Length: 229
Length: 143
Image 1 (cartoon, helix red, strand yellow):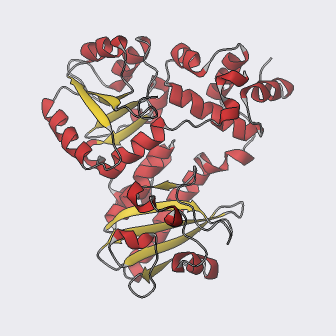
Image 2 (spheres, one colour):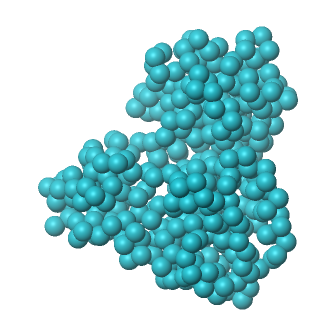
């Protein structure tokens, strides 16, 4: 069982987090330990794009039913949550009863916690907690912000920063090598004793690291770089 | 991982030596609003190997310790050796052991504590592990 107070500050579960599922568990644990049912972490891009919790790199446990209405798929520039994120880099507790949010209003509760997060590269993200009855005081908000920053830092290092990482892991090189032999993901999965999903995850990571868009380019780039012969 | 994409139920195989866990998981699945799952149950790894060899299983939830086996490091590779290439998730009442750090080396896709599983977790697992992470330009046809 995840015990947030000890786990997040002291680190074992945080250090062991290696995939999106692990980070989903950590953020969910953080939300739950402060009385919130739902969380969402995503990038804050621009006024035009708003906050898209359905983005492929977003992480959340919000019910799909909240996003069924096409108009409510993005927290847009007029939404008070987005406005707050544009105006302040400090974590805050917002009362949706006073400043209604169309998307987050689906939670049925008035309290939303907003934690702006910043990657070392300058990219902006945010953590949103909703679906809780209690309104966190300053001390609780400070703890939420600290844990959120710790989890996010690790999440960025392990998952989000692949674009700027050079070099491939041994496993990634193995998979590029087998791809260069003409093997499909399913075949590589059988050869290496992995799931096809894991093989595709590695390929997706290599594509991002090498800044290429398909398998042929990936193999060509790996050969040019001397990663495989 | 095509079952949900073509509109049919996702076949999930639960491998756990405690039949009560099957009942508990079925109850939790009912709370997952987005889940379209056909849950099957076997109590040992031998049965699981036979079942995945028969085909049609999309995902396996594998209890960490199955008597008389040790832990997932002994059981998960058996499913891979049987040719199963779908996601394997380890479920356990205690996932704090250091050996869990290396779960991917044993062909496991994710780990989750039994007490962490609820409707939102199941929804996330299904979405995460049935979603194709690669764009169309990276399909096998482009090889």
